[in-house]
Structures are given as structure tokens and as C-alpha cells.
Image 1 (cartoon, one colour):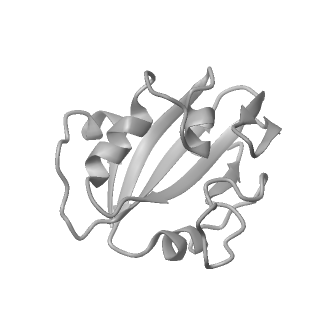
Image 2: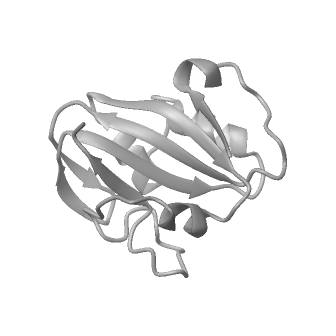
Length: 133
């Protein structure tokens, strides 16, 4: 596992090919009602979240895309990240599978199915609420 703060991540173009899973540490500074594509409209509480995703290739490009504010909203996480007062604070990269990494996180599932449309491990969601600490 490798974890970078947002400042450390800036400018990083390539990562080791064996790293296939990423986790975005996200802080939501105010409660917000967000329409998450076709999934649902949901009131996200203030606090810290962890989103787990993967990319079989170009992992660095995927993470950079998520950090961009100028993108087409394509995945569930895009809707959350584009909301005002939302900030990615750190990025973790792993060689283990997306579902394995997600299942290692103790957190609360607030919105079932978030980021887990292709999940075969019954994670419930790939976004976990870590509380307001």
C-alpha cells in the first residue's frame, strides 16, 4: 500500500503497474443533497468518506480524472466529487483487488450500490462513511 496526501499526489504521472486499486479519502464540509446519476438523490452528511475504485490500466490517469473539476459526470463518485465543499485529502494505492480493499474498511454504508455496479463480492457499496471526526 502507498498513500499520498493531495499535495504529494500533484504532478505524479505514473505509478507501479502492480497497483490496481485506489482509495480516495474525501471530506464533505457541509451536508448536501446530491443526485447521484440514476442511483438516487441522497443527503450526504458532513464528514469523512472513503471511496474504493480500480483501474486495470492507467491507474494514475483515473485518479487524476477524479481530482479534476472539469469532467463529464460518468461514475457515481463524480457526482460526489463535483459537489461544492467536497475535497479529496489523500489517495491510497494498492495491489489487492477493489473489493478486498473495500472490505478492510470499517465504515458505514449510507447509499447502497454506490460505486458497486460491477461488484461481485456483495460489498453493498464502495463508498463508506467514516464519521465526522
